[in-house]
Amino acid sequence: MNSTAGAWRQRIGYGAADLSCNLVWQMIGLYLMFYYTDVVGLKAVQVSLLFLLTRIVDGVADVMMGIIIDKTNTKWGKSRPYFLWGAIPFAILGILAFYVPDVGPVGKLLYAYMTYMGLSMVYTMVNIPLASILPSLTSEPQERTMLSTVRIIFSFIGATAVSVLTMPMVKTLGGDSQATGFFWTMVIFSIIACLFFFYTFKNVEEKVKVQVEKVTVKQAFSTLKGNKPYYIFALNILFMWGSYFFQQGALIYYFTYNLDRADLVAMIAGIGSFVPIAGTFLTPFIAKKMYKRTLFMISSVVNLVGILIMLFAGSNIPVIIVGAVIAAIGYGTRQSIYFSMQADPVDYGEWKTGINASGLLSALNGFIGKVTMAVAGALFGLMLTWGHYVPKGHQTEQALLAIKMGYLIIPAVLVVVSMITMSFYNLDKIYPKIRAEIDERNSEREKQGIAV
Image (cartoon, rainbow, N blue to C red; front, side, top):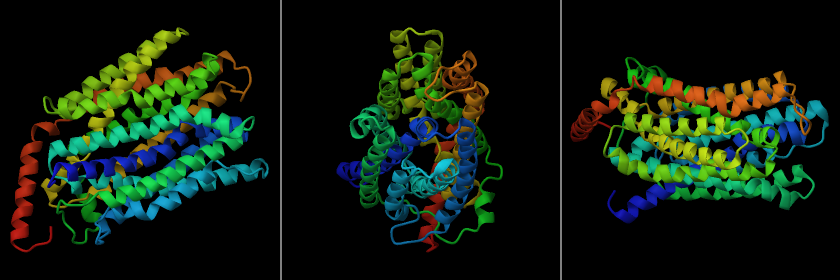
């Protein structure tokens, strides 16, 4: 970057896009299943199937979006235009997802499929470019970490706003009608998200020269051949994000029914989205002292300890809050370094093949994340069905166990499996050499007049 002001303008612009994503997607993760089961009146098993099918279809759309990005060539770049083109549709479909008309059980279910699938598709349109644009914003590893850190801080700001404000806003805007309250709350969040996407489009710029010649789908997939770091990184997405999605989806149920403390939902959700900022803010400085994988492992241990404290705290609220804070610090640091790491296997593939397929690999990451989200949501819905969950009613011991497993037990197990998986990731040791060779290769191509 040419100046500190310019660097921060781009960092904030980049982060604003993830704030936008989280204003809408945090609503989906925290409240959509509850909205469907307890407000709209859909059955848990119906919502389970809805989440599974929609997110798998959406995952395929992620891959297609990656291919589209790799083939895009505009005056604004490959990834940047989609922040502009997707902003308004994203806001509209976000609003429609939380407005279900009274058209009978079948009509409500069909409407839920159409609006949720549409929102997921448009989310792909604005979120995949957020990952694929990173290698084009800078080639400097520390600046990538800084950009990723700012992005995560902004994502947590958006997530915190949703976590802390949603239920009070639902009550204030809807009174006795949760349906009305959720609708107007989503109207406000969606409009703000749209405006921030416009801000991102204006303030980010694809400055790093990468190949702009046409890349076929076959060529793009060739970057996966022998790309062991990517395979490990991709496999870890299942476990790392699986832990997060289970806990996020079960939170409102756990505090409402297991602890009979629905009043704590906003506080705990707020802790989970705000406290991580502390760990995230420190990530760029800590990352200078150790390998990214090492920091990922340490932060995962901290996250696991927090979850275990909550698990063994029983109904002791002060201890639960302490556990939530510890878990959030670990989660924030881990997520920040994860987003910094995801550009490195892209460079590894380019180093081996000469092909930059950041769009495809980012899309594959998104696909795996969506499948993980689908499976977590579907399994939790099936667990509620297994437990004979009754919306707004008295829950059986089996239902309470299902909710507890979704919020604490399964997430803890998945964090452990994630750490085992990442113990095989060794790209950090050779990455400086890889980045230097890519830069030298691109410099030579530019001198020879070859498009880079």
